Length: 343
Image 1: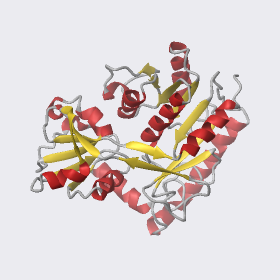
Image 2: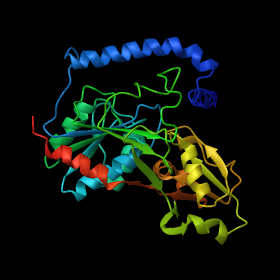
Image 3: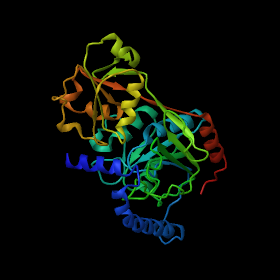
Image 4: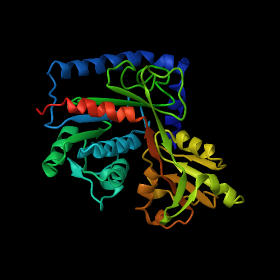
């Protein structure tokens, strides 16, 4: 609980340049110096970086926490597949209990490989390997899947040991917050860092978006019962169909408000339960939640299905979302890949 309060305090502090942020600013200058020195060491070859025999696309963010990388990664993999490529994905596997690289399989659990890699594997239907060392994970993936001809790194923007050919930086509606680096602000790197493409995950465009930014919208139109995905109902019809029922919505993602706002836009009224990103549901049963129906994210559903106290709870309904982006992003990425030559 104390950790949650601290995270909430930082989340509020990082959105403006108030007194607390100003007090932390000297530490941000030190962080900036160390970060710049690390990048320079890789650029000069003092720290070793590896080039793979296939092109690498990194999907990442410079804003601490979640901005929607997993839906964007799934969209990108599917776009590459439609264009005739055979992609593979490497990921950190947050919370995974393993050493070295491990391939995600249909029998994998979130405890073994992490919630996001498992969700990517289920949707993208491509090889996925998780590991702290992105280079080792990618090499293991290519060794086991020689047909793979492009690697997508889910996160890993700051893992310069893995050379990349395309960088996609993803923001959400918070953009760069107060614009300062950690710990005075939410940025891991300056907002001006180079990248090939900028994507903003937001329902509506804004005048303060970075120049040339492309819009991503997360669309979710229905809910599926956790115990039986064949049972589904439209979000817009949910409250109208059963007006007297009490609804709760829980989200253990980087920015739960995005999920809640999507549900509000569908006309739903509910109790919002904001949980930390990658929340561990093993000791949480919703027993104290007085609701007839509880809406959860797909990312949380991946974990709930592996917990006996939750997987049979008839109140739990999953809200799948999909990323919608301008086709121009896929076309421009493919254009860059066509110019790639193997190492």
